[in-house]
Image 1 (cartoon, chains in turn cyan, orange, green):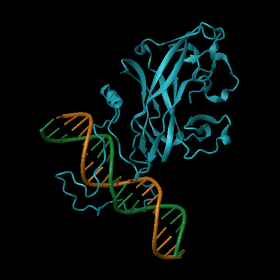
Image 2 (cartoon, rainbow, N blue to C red):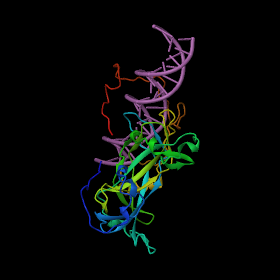
Image 3 (cartoon, helix red, strand yellow):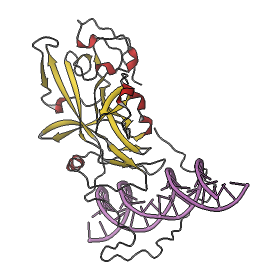
Image 4 (cartoon, rainbow, N blue to C red):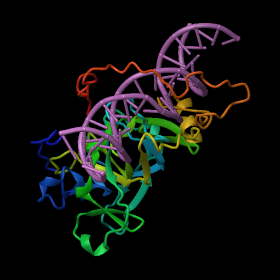
Length: 293
DNA sequence: AAAGCGGCCTCCGTTTAAAG
DNA sequence: CTTTAAACGGAGGCCGCTTT
């Protein structure tokens, strides 16, 4: 989508760390992930920067949804972006130092996106997939690129960062408060970070600068959904800082039928619910035709 | 072909959080 | 505190598949 954003730019600067393997251009700029990158454009022009992504809060569960009533993954996944300035790249004096103050980083243009991967139930014989397809492991279960199921992911899959006090100093955090999954099962997320206003030396595509894989979570059918826990401290902290997300003080789990809460009188017509379902032949395209993604 | 069964989506009432 | 809006859990009933 952002491919060739800076196409045509030619630089005459000396060879830098980002000049290797230009041959395969099919990879959407993934070949620089995790590497020190010399930038010629953007806020870090002239510097070599290595970006690192770390999941600091993982989703635990979600409720599958179809077309309406979206239910976000909970707790909201949060990843932290760390940036390291690298000097004397490739020499024996190579030295890395973290950006001293993240408040000084130009936030505009920084984005993090997510991909969804199913976690297989039982480990298929590990021999099967020694192809370079495997991108990650979840307790010895190989996760293959071709199993990517991002199309089942709905909501805000691209988010801008928030600069928030975290562990005593400002940090760049990406909060995914509006993610839902359309199929049930176990999954992991892959986070990828890029900056639309930066361009590496001698590089045509927009570069993915960092990625990381998150912890596994489970998406339940409506019926077996166990309910949501109270918000984590991190979630509440983010809300306090104005990040838009759902918070709940207590665990949410409605009392079972017949269960009473001291002065609770059971509903008179429990069991015989009248519904005014729009009786039509439904064909379920009739109403709710709006779709996203 | 008809009846039975089960999975699943949508819709609803209640509860909680936010706003006034 | 009271009111409004959103979040949330529950389950009815639709739909497609299986069995008789």
